[in-house]
Image 1 (spheres, rainbow, N blue to C red):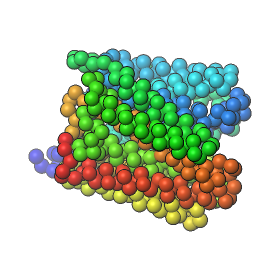
Image 2: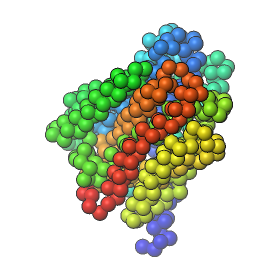
Image 3: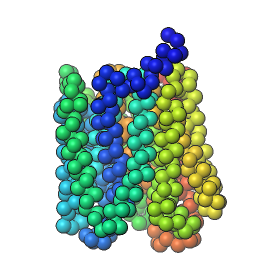
Image 4: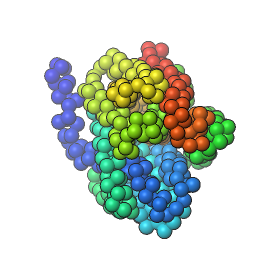
Length: 468
């Protein structure tokens, strides 16, 4: 095969041929719903609090969504096998729509939080089923481009989400945001049975891994609660307990008849195990900027909330651009080289943020954020492709949906560690110049161990000694 014909078979035209374009569009809509819901809601929460009260429960709007999203993402693979991808995806759209309706019509903060939990479940399922659809509907030669497109949707949501949220919040129509998302979720659910035609239920014996899901729920709940507790000692204890429980999930799953994760997902000597470990740790290492970047930039640089949000959003934008630069990479050596470069960029970017965030010129801070985002763009889609390529056919559905749960679990751990660190250095007592300066250093210093762990897991993923 000539190089020209190989490029044609892996190009965009071939990717969207043979009826794949409508399915590709459905997947992109699902990812948009997941990404934009989170970003828009974060922007309108002050308006929600002003109307419904419950400022003390602000963090629960995030924690509830996160718990639902992780559990749903983890169970998506098995549900797609039990119900079939068409029915499962339709149900996910309806659950998200119902959650949005509850939040839109909420008379008080309690109903609003129930709506957020259902939105998390719906979004987690939608994103998980989208990963399953990518794994089963697209040839392996197209996976890098599809995953790059997913990153592109996230990048667009990062730019448009805060803008839309800000417009609705400023006009006093925050409820309209949820009505609009409810309508989009209904369209998604209605289109799924038609666009996913041809997918079938698993013919083998499947079941629900209840023990693993319950254990996962306990671990994620502990970590999510940690991010809402102002006492650093309790926060650290909850994070530690959560990590132990998450490790217990891997142990239980390895011996279970009905598995939640692919075979040997907890073994760092395998492609699957080292890949998931890299995704988890690298995501955790990046959360300091996402969670505390806007507050630090507003306090130390005098930026407006919107401008600070967009500075942080540069990370997602560079992720998107970098993902498209490697979308056409072929050959094992090229893939391995970009995965290693990506992990190195993330480690370097986190290190630079620890050095620069406090007092360096804003341009250098933005450059460091770009390095982190580019690292994810260079490596994420190729990591996903390498893991899927190593999985047996029976594990592809649960292996694909696990990308969402692993990444979000890493995000929850990283946010909780950043929260504990920030509170230890005085952020919890009040946002002052002194507490912002301390937070600007230490949330990134404490993220470095995760970045280092993720870097070495990525190196192992691309090594010759790793097993399929």
